[in-house]
Image 1: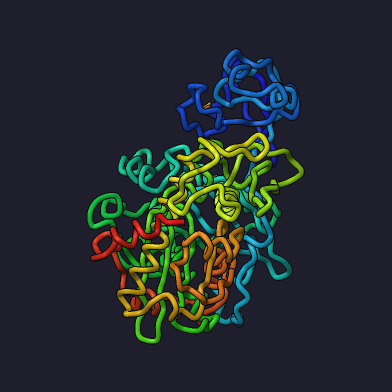
Image 2: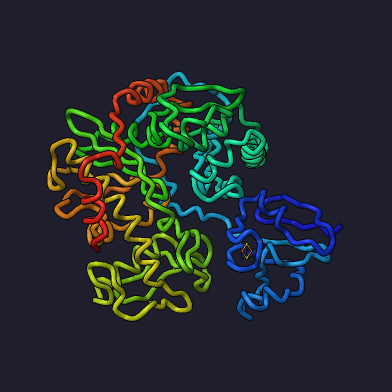
Length: 477
Ligand code: FES
């Protein structure tokens, strides 16, 4: 059987002669949106050694340049001999992974040796390994993507016990694989993430999250063998959201403020002198580059920023392969500035607009509008609940990996932040990773999390009066 080496990493697998890489790479988090039918072209991988002869499907779907550079479709290639493939892995952009600079002392740590902090995202997992001397951060695709790209489809799959167990195992194995790399065993892995991801990993009941009332309720710290799970607020506000709130409190941001982590699922808090309102809203996958004609994750070759003169930047020293979430936001901002798109989102230049070989379509603009309308409506309604208006805000804190790419002028100029928001936007880094780390190191942080989780009034936006109006208003560019 031919042996396939998978880089980055040390992994190898054997594949029956003549087979494709579908089952081997599913475990590595490579997704197969068309189920391996060779239609979508989204399961591209690059062979760095011994690329197989392209199949007839690959000759149709891939460009001659891609074929000559070793790119193949994982679902269509036929493995005949030993080879090596390089996976497109999530990029660790320093600004994305910057941990918040909050002054906290190490006090009553739960672990005196090497430990790991993990941020379990729906798409990407970040693991930071800490020892007395240094901190090393690794990123990889969440291998549970094989059971669906978004939280809801994954939860539906996880309702079947055997699938839930497979999802749990595959992620634990992957984390173990990463933490065994530095050679020093980790005594503890502290975990933050959204409630669905952590419930699956902790093997907790998920029925109430997958169906009405869509909440597992508030939870405290839980320790399961070497895994430490952080507290959760309730609703879809999990330990990643609680970490965001905790950081915002420790930063002593001027109130009233909005703290949010924008993504496929956006978590948001409005903190005023009198109350903390929290909500979670499904914004759709456009912010992460999914569901867009030529969309892709923020990896090698993705257009991540379009300038106002319509020139663009790609990740790494690669020609454009597609466009990621921040590329889409900046492209629409630039098109609006140049008068190529109307306020209601109509592309004036025709059915599509090209950036090099990559293009965005009218449908892509609509996907962006629906994603950002949800964020806009969330802010508007939280403010309304607190009897405030956008001009009352003193600060806007933005966290998370997608947030790390966003610019203040895009957020304000595209009506993502409601009109009248004058407060400065501050990027605060990967708060989930911060929460997982400092829960281990500081008793003060542990106590603050335990108390904050009970102070949040969770708002179900869709049930709020005025949601439709705020959402429609948010569609405007
Ligand atoms: S999964 Fe669609 S082309 Fe491979």
